[in-house]
Length: 458
Image (tube, rainbow, N blue to C red; front, side, top):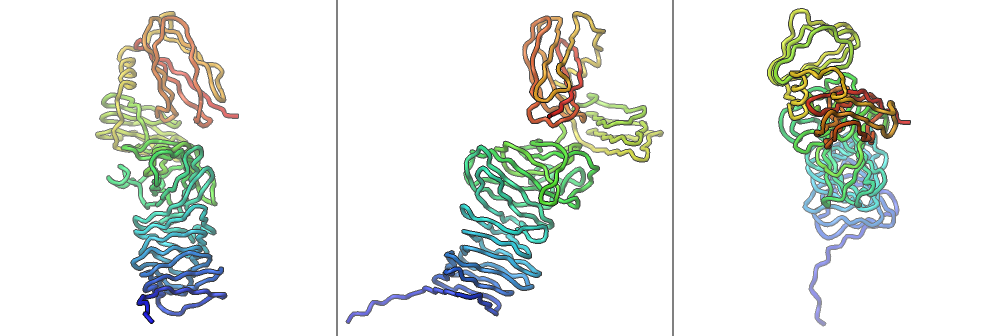
């Protein structure tokens, strides 16, 4: 009889009970390790080495004990259910892993290092907290599917800094998220930011380009903030510069602070900064050159000079003042910061574009007293919730420009249109602007009118 010559490398393990394998490592040298029938393998202070194939069926691999262990080998293991339950120490990835059903974070960290943890469609993560999360200490990412409901990515590095994504109105896709313990001026390069920021950068990418319409919630602890003064915050995305995608006060989420943005299609690096950070301000320069700030100041103001700024001002209690100049800031004799005031100074360049050039022209040639030949503006209703009417009068046909700024002078909305002579009307939609006070600048024929706008959402 002829004998068939073949080799059989199949290891089929069926455990109807929990197994404690008390050795330094469990190594799959070849073939397959299959865990089925709702069985469990408990690796107490053991490494898992997958040189063969670990395949998911219906079982759990649990890492327990007090020492740091690794998941490595030459092949990427696939788990049905994976549990991290380390009383101390952590589980470090030396190989990319896939979880088909559930990742349970009972105690301790799953440190991705330079490998990814991929959760397949409908896979879930349970019990993440400030002491038990997916640590993104290097280049590794946590990958999950996001459709049109909230999906929490329980990531962090030195602290727990999760992100919540919701692809509301977008195309279902898999997203990769990691967190860095830094904010750099140019996104992934440049000097480190040392103030006015949450000291974290969330990197968010998608598997298939385009189709994203993400709502993004970024979460941090008070201890993650550097050089902050309690102002409102902005969420910013880096696209060649830090661009504000949301602003407002921090709210409580998962017992921590959070700020959310909507309708994000441009992914990459995200950060949370104070709204007074020079990284995000689209400055209106007070002067095209040097600026001298004098007198008594008792409110929230920013002063920006394109070149030099000097000041002997007195900042009253409650004042929160920011000075910015591109060359030099000089505090002269008499400059005083009273108890309860806040003062900040930055060397940073404010742009002096067409908007500021018009302001400069108005300064050189002051707007004359109001006559029928002078720009006039009326706003009603004001305050308003969703939209308001802007009536304006121009003496002769010209282009007319509208700018909406916040109290810090940052331009939030602008538009330019042709205007005929006489009275006419347009409207302004509040859109996503939070409730608060803003300024409307209207400019035409070398003249400017300013109106205060109050948005009061119901």
